Length: 300
Ligand code: HMG
Ligand code: MG
Image (cartoon, rainbow, N blue to C red; front, top):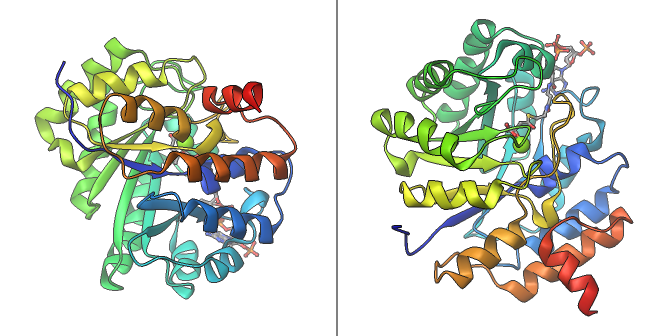
């Protein structure tokens, strides 16, 4: 296999992780956690989402969190934005980067953002144009790439079609989401082979959830195909509340362990990463599911 020398890990825990937690993490704890994450060597943190708080009450404090964290110059602080109202709120706090999102399957798209796929593009077009005009980079997510909780199998053509349209609207990078964590390494190879015929590997990121325990195996296949951007959430937090069965993201600490021990540089400092995980574990009051944190609990 052929592996890169460096990989960028994009931490989505404060957004994808906390959006799926039953309890509300206090605003000051979110702020402190993000500040701890900023000390780990991560270069990218998705800190919240500017969605309708009636849909995601866990992140109702997006404005306060974004305004109050201590921002480091060399870190990109990003947030999810579904529409113009969300963009206004994100611009109000001068978020560094905006992420738009939609699904490759109709039913999940409708359940998640209350629109059909074709109704979503004009909304995202406005968001992307306005964000770029305001000097922001825009990242895109496609969800349900490897399977939909409502429709089951999702065709690669559907994924390619949504991806092409998002790139044509101006996103600089596309993150392919295994929303419910059903992907297997062979499927990742098949889908990525088609995706990489159309888009360069530098513009593609992978966003695995670890519901079935296949996330790290999937990372290995993606690495071998030249992907160097991966999303993950510290401790294995995460999931989409509008995707039944979706569980935690690939854990940043486990991903870091694997990459680091393979000699692949991520710039992340392990000790600080574990400190940040211990902090949020205590605030949640539940053990984090990552292998790293299980080991940590056994040893300490
Ligand atoms: P809607 O209810 O159809 O919105 O929601 P609407 O445009 O009809 O507006 C209804 C009300 O909401 C209005 O208020 C709006 O102002 C307000 P009212 O006039 O009734 O007082 N509103 C907002 N308020 C604050 N911020 C906003 C906003 N937008 C409308 N941005 C909408 C449509 C898209 C907003 C809603 O469906 C929504 O917020 N969905 C987000 C769901 C979500 O966050 N899901 C999880 C993230 S995606 C994910 O996890 C997958 C990912 O990780 C990748 C993967 O794993 O695959 C990214
Ligand atoms: Mg996700």
